[in-house]
Every structure is written in structure tokens, then in C-alpha cells.
Amino acid sequence: MARLISLLTAVAAVAGTAQAILPTDWTPICKEIKSKILNASDVIYPRRLLHFGYQPLVLVVLPTAISGGHSSNPGFSSTKGVHISLKRLHQVKLSDDKSVAEIGFGNIWTDVYKALDGTGRNVAGGRVPGPGVGGLTLGGGYSWKTSQYGMACDTVKSYELVLPNGTITRVSKTKNPDLFVALKGGLNRFGIVTSAEFYTHEQPEMVYGGLGTYSTRYPNPYYHHPYGGPLGTTAEVLFFHDGPDKPASFELFDDIKPLINTVQSQSFVSFVQTIPAQVPELTNIRGVFITFVTSELSQTFLEAVRQETNAIGKIMSLHGGITVSYDVEPFTKYGEHATKSAFPHTESPLPTVGALKKLAIDEGIYSDASTYYPNYALFDATAKQLYGNENAARLARIRDQVDPDRIMELAGGFKI
Image (cartoon, rainbow, N blue to C red; front, side, top):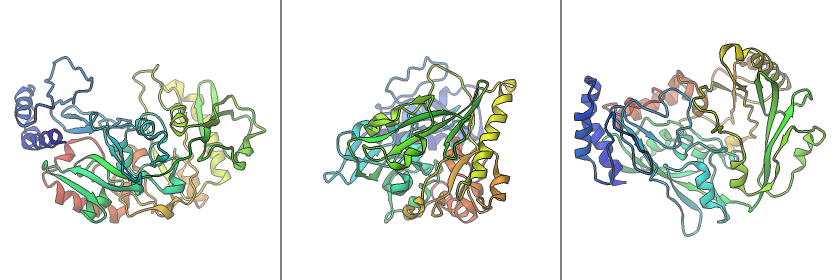
């Protein structure tokens, strides 16, 4: 922890130089940062061979702290400048009564689930392999447990935060309460969060779930995740039940023959690891998310999703595309678990990805007051679109208090 504090202080010390003058040789700034941090950290100089390993990585000049690096928005998971790796902050510690877990923000969520496997406890976190604890939680965080316990940010008891001036503080409902709200969906504009305490819940030894892939030749109103590409359109359904046995609601799919089926009784960590969110065989794939939310899902809307996926899938190869997908996420009334947060979700908004807003308006399932889910939003989303007018103004005031020199605005991310 001390090394991260000293590093951020060093970044703050040279930020004025970095902003005002952009030299072609960063070596003097690298040396200045190196002189201000502990030996436990390292500075890797420009044009020097990079070896990641388990060492913190620092490149000058724009500071970005990386947890999992899952965002596809340009500059959100990378930087041309100071890269602060949180990889060593990988602790997962249960309290004596197992009601709270302290989780370092250098973890990815599958590592957390592995650490908690067999303890009888779990937390509301990421749903697929890849996302880090930090980004998902600070963006709100939809979970397989959201309908039961709320978003990941709703289950946070406290954060450990390194402020832009290098000081360390605890942030909770009773200590720094404004910052506590800001960090629940406000992302990376208030400092570097190194860890958080999450309230835990009981976890059955086995859950029932997995992936079913179906041909869209068989119309079904419950398709969750249509994929379009040069070879046609398929639909992925991600099944999850927080218990070992198949629930009656899944019988809706019994008469449809799947192309792929991994649904079974298995441990929670095994279930998450089977979801194909990463394709390591393919490199340099580029893509983006774009999102809006609806209040519910109508049959007309779901049919329009299928048709648009078909249409785009047929022409995308002409423009260098590989695949397009629409995510339809049918959470129940999870807003009853919502806490006061930067991202408004007391009305249980359902995030979806696509350009079907006009139809959603016609169907009466979209409101102009709706906001975008930060973790799915395109890079040009404004603070008002993410948080609404009132919350955006509040976040700007908090930002002015904790970061008057705009240190965190040197990093990638949405602007407040």
C-alpha cells in the first residue's frame, strides 16, 4: 500500500510538468518519479524491454490504474503514460464471522470466486472470466446475484482509497459519505481504490447453470443473447439458478434442441469459468459496447432485437466485422436492494445493447430520464447520460473537492 501512495504522490508532483509540456524524452520525468517512490515498486523507462511478470509496471505520462482491463473503450484500460498495475493487491480475506470479505482491486473476479470456493460464502461480483474487481465495482456491477442482493456496489461496506494528493483514506457510509456515493458507479475520477470490504452471503456448494446455444429458426421469447455473423444468427441463453437443482422456469427450453449445452449442476466458480467471454486464440480484436436501458422487455422489442441481429449479421463482413451481439438482461426488481449511488438504479433498469431506442419508446419501456449503465456505455457518453443531471452535478462538486488539480483526468475514462 505504501508504495502505491508514494507512486501516486510522485505522479501528482510531476503532473503539472506532464500537462504543460509534452517532451519526446520522458526519461527525466521517469527519474523524478523513481526518486519519490519506494524500492518495492519499479519504473520501466521508455524504449526499455518490458517484462510484466508480477512487478508493478510504470510508464510515463498519463496515470491509469488497471484492475482487470476489460473495457473496450479506447484509453480506458490502457495509457500512453503512467500505468499503475494493481496486480499485487490480490488479497481475499474473510472476517472472523465470514460476514465481510476484504478484496484487493488487483484481483479478477474468477480469482475471488476460487479463493471463496468451499467457504460457504460468496459476494456479488462479475459474471464472466476477465473483468477485474475494480472496474466492475466502480461502474456499478451487475452480478448473477443482482436480483437477490443488488449490484456489486450495493454490497460494499467500505473502500480503501488513495486520493489524488497521495493520502490514504477509508470511505464508507459514515466516513466520507459523499465519496462513498461517488464511488458507487462514479468509476475512476476520485482517486485509486486499492480494496473494498464486501458484505458476503451464503453460497450453496453447487449451483445449476451454464450455456445453451440455439438456432433462431425456432422462435422463443426468452432468448437472451442473439449473435449474428457471416454464418447466420444463433441465440445464447445463460442459465443460472443459485442452487443445485434445475428450477421449473428452465423447462421452457426443454422442447428446443440446443446446438451447444453446458448446463449442469456445478460449483459457482466452475459455472462462471465456462462462460465464453474470452477468445484467446484471436488477437487484436476490436469492438465497442453501446447501451441504453428499458423498464421491461416486451415481445415486440425482443423480436426486433432478433431481426436487427439478423440484418447486421448478413452485412457486417463487408465492413470487416466478425460478430455482433445484443445482450438482453432480464433482472427482476433488484432496485429494492439499491443503495444511494452515483448510478441510479432504484427503478431496476434493464441494460441492453443496441440501437432500438425508438421502438422501446413506442413500446413505452424507455424513459428520457433513463441513464446509461457506465460499464456498457460508449466512450463519448456524457456525465448527464450516465448519472442524470442531479447526480452529475453532485459528482462534479465531489471531484472539485478531492481533485482540484484534475490529476485523475489525466487517466482514460468518462469525463465529469
